[in-house]
Length: 270
Ligand SMILES: [Zn+2]
Image 1 (tube, rainbow, N blue to C red):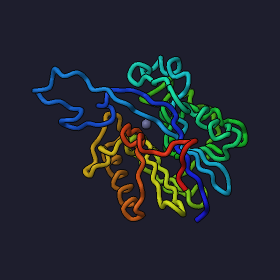
Image 2 (cartoon, rainbow, N blue to C red):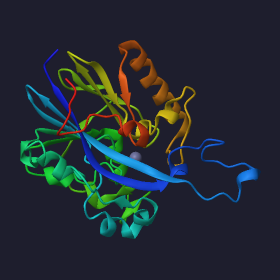
Image 3 (tube, rainbow, N blue to C red):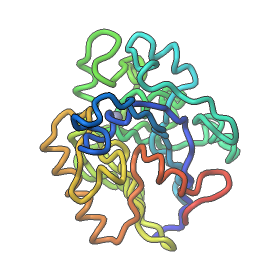
Image 4 (tube, helix red, strand yellow):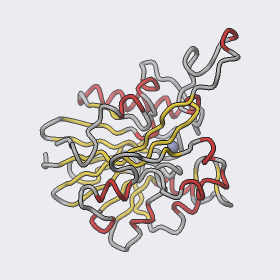
């Protein structure tokens, strides 16, 4: 197993009605005794993952954009998922990379879990003719068919015109780093598996699993799901791999778990 360093990058914290993330009686869905209760908003943090690998630097996802307010205005997302201004430490992808003394030109491979507005927004920073940009073929094919500014949580200008390297199914990116095809949230959502010589297997689920509460078991669904049955199959596929490898599973938008992660530049996994 190659020596690697895995850095979790903070790439912006959104705030939102938690019903987007979890459809659960008693938690986000209220019974008749609570119908007058206020809507519950909470943190929806985003992260990227930077892996220093002997064969190159790999970046998983790119977080939310600095110009979120303008870019999201035509979709209404700026009102549903406003980004909290980071008050200390790295907050967006560019500053998080800079905290490791890295810029976009230092990244050899960007892998996008999917092309939603809070994951693919900064990928054009890497459109430099050198960085390889990887996404799932079904995600690319479907996202490219969207006409107009956006559809659902895909904003076309985030990814249009890029020269993608397409992957299909489960695939190795570099030795010890692989993607797991986990559709359902979108057509071609992927999760990331990293096998570390010291700390074992880490699985980054991105939006295949939003929260520890979504994971269960049993798995609990959410408000934005393209195909619920595929989504459920994907969660069980991940659970199987996680059980087999005794992996630590890092969820896509879990505010509680986020407090326990080792963020760059202070900490890393190896
Ligand atoms: Zn998503």
